[in-house]
Image (cartoon, rainbow, N blue to C red):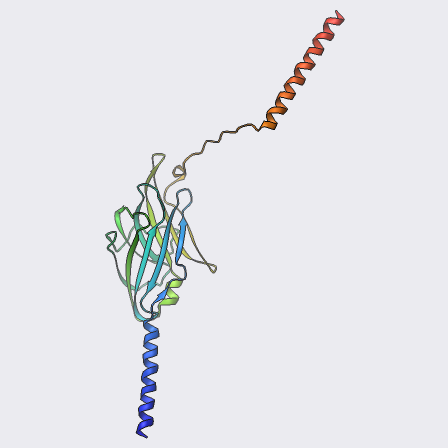
Length: 234
């Protein structure tokens, strides 16, 4: 009898441990990859986001981002997560760039209303293909399914500080699940002057030149015949 009880206790302990391990298992964002965003002035970035707990009252999000744009003078002003529930308690750090919350540069009509972000006034040079790590610590009064919440969230970036055509240019875009496919959208934080003007010079093709020459010869011949006929009639 005692052996059976010990066996059941062991089974219960194993099940509890398995459940706790499942709750504590780290998970990856389904949208991890490299994206470009913006319209007339665009920038590219790689994203790798993970979190410490699938469920429970808290989780720690690790967001690793790398600038993939070689634009000279590019700065990052803010990074963050959006499209998450309102009312979560959070703190964040981005020691690689000196970022801290709140990131006031991570706002605008292209982002859903609820934003958890961090940034730095005036921006900072992100470097090129250098991994920058940002941490977001979330907590809630009730247990949450963090995997569902974070996979539905978007990762946003505000980058710019570049002068084109005497205009200060920037881009704000987010990457999130859009009808089953992760992609970037958003609009420029500046204007069309951020797109360098392109002057198009049309070079006539050889065939066009031949047709033009033939036409000129024909016109000259017709004029000669008219003049000769006029002289004959005098």
